[in-house]
Amino acid sequence: MTRAVQFELRLAERMSRLGTETAFEVLNRARTLERQGKDIIHLEIGEPDFDTPGNVVDAAIEALHAGWTHYGPSAGLPELREAIAQQVSESRGVPVMPEEVVVVPGGKPIIFFSILALIDSGDEVIYPNPGFPIYESMIHYVGAQAVPIRLREEKDFTLDVDELSGLISDHTRMIILNSPQNPTGGVLAKHDLEQIAQAIGDRNIFVLSDEIYSQLIFEGKHHSIIAEPGFKERTILLDGFSKSYAMTGWRMGYGIMRTDLAEQIARLMTNSNSCTASFSQVAGLEALRGDQSSVERMRFQFRERRDLFVAGLNRIARFHCRVPKGAFYTFPNIVATGWNSRAIADALLEEAGVACLAGTAFGEYGEGNLRFSVANSIENLGRALDRIDQWTRRRLL
Image (cartoon, rainbow, N blue to C red; front, side):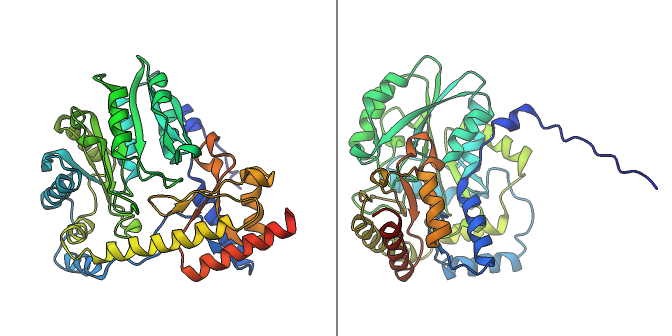
């Protein structure tokens, strides 16, 4: 009998620096509990619970039948790049050309490719904390120094510009902004962006502005640093279709950037994905140019759910929650419970059947908070509040 040889898996050292996204881990744990017969209310995953609009689905089906099943340009279909350029020009108030658009499979590749293209080992990148965990993961992956800037609850989870000024050094190559923000729902107002622009000044620092929730804002108007004087050539604007059009599984995002950088990002696309699926891009064209009423309905319902859930959290003993201004998350403070974030998130899942995320899933400064997604029905949000309230009465009071 031939003896099987066991070969050791020898990973590259850089793999030890790669992080993960806890939301998917918690989702898997929740589904395991469901298979065991436990009823779980899912408030952990950052995904709209709405179906993709029918006109967008129909456009994709027609595209499939019409033969849009082949390779396309690495930077995206010209028609879609043109539509994106027009939409961003109108929404941000700056002229954008199709050559400044790169279409990619999801929003994350813009984070990944921008850091790969611009950041070397030893460079510093300032990023929001608590914040989307992939920022820190990718900074570490390329061997750069991750420099967190704390988003403070007392400032409605916006950053302190004086603190930002103190963190900028001669080694700073990139600053990451996210508004509306995951996980806090914080929003950078125009005056915030003006102050950030002043703090950066004329330094040769790129800003990666993650605006994936740009159409899910509840108070006021969305603003982008790309519109600040002198910042268009130093800004990489990230946006996409996942959140605004409930197209998470379609995997389609895009970046807006100066043309010489766009050419390099397109080269990374060529070397990794070849291109974004052609029929998905045809659907994206319909999403941008077709009926927008679904976006308005979704925003209205998310705001209604936010109001209900925040009010309910604030009635629960030892919970306190500010009202988020955008996205579809709430980020309550649970310091008064005496529990750390991971322990209480685990207990709510195991004992109350409510899946949420510990604030520390978004960085060290998320300690003392939980993240709940309100991408669920009013009925289920009400049931979740009842379960959390009952759990606190049993375990904390």
